[in-house]
Amino acid sequence: MASNRARRIAKEIADIKADVHSHIVVDPAGNGDDLTHLRGQFNGPPDTPYEGGTFFVDIKIPSEYPFRPPNMKFETKIWHPNVSSQTGAICLDTLSSQWSPVLTIKSALISLQSLLSTPEPKDPQDAEVAGMMIRNPAEFEHVARDWSVKYAGAPKKEVAEGSGGATAESIKRKAQQAKDNEEKVKLAAYHGYNKDLIDRFVAMGFDVESVVSAFEYVGIDKMNGDDYELEEAYMGDITARLFGEA
Image (cartoon, rainbow, N blue to C red; front, side, top):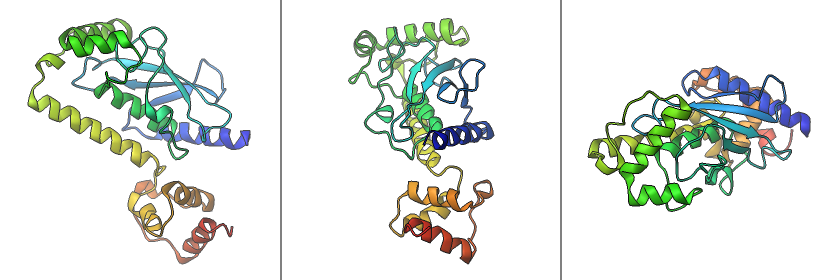
């Protein structure tokens, strides 16, 4: 089981390194090769107080992974209602009740990045930050930006549009970014396979996780995410795997 976990983690890290578009970085913590202790990195999303900052996340992989979520906390100090300003602890359903084995380390980090665009002050990890965001959003943005400059290396400039003076356009843009990030999380479940290709089997009544697992077991080529018609022999192998006959 441990070797299966190590192989999955190694594959996830390789997939992250191969994905030049997500700008997500994950490596073993320190200079070691311990795949149960990792360090993640992502950029602060645009049109937020965190824009231009680089945020590091400590990641510890439990022995039950992927059936239990990774334990993540921010290394970089951040002023956000769903992250403890003292310990970096995170309040995010994806890392607790909404975790699924089909999710990955990358999809969890994308969810964290999305959380910076869509804070939830009514379900806080840090009551002080949440209270400030609700009572005085302009002050919240000022402090959040100041912390981003101080701890995350963001450039020294004020955010043009704050919570207290957001425009309809900026609200629409943030909503679209949150939607895009949500789509990224969903697509991560396909492990690089073309969505339409996998969904043809999902339409037969199988879930995405089982289909992707069968594809990987049989050794189906990802073809850089392109859709294509599978050879009949491969179709039989995949179907047999899905029905537990292989």
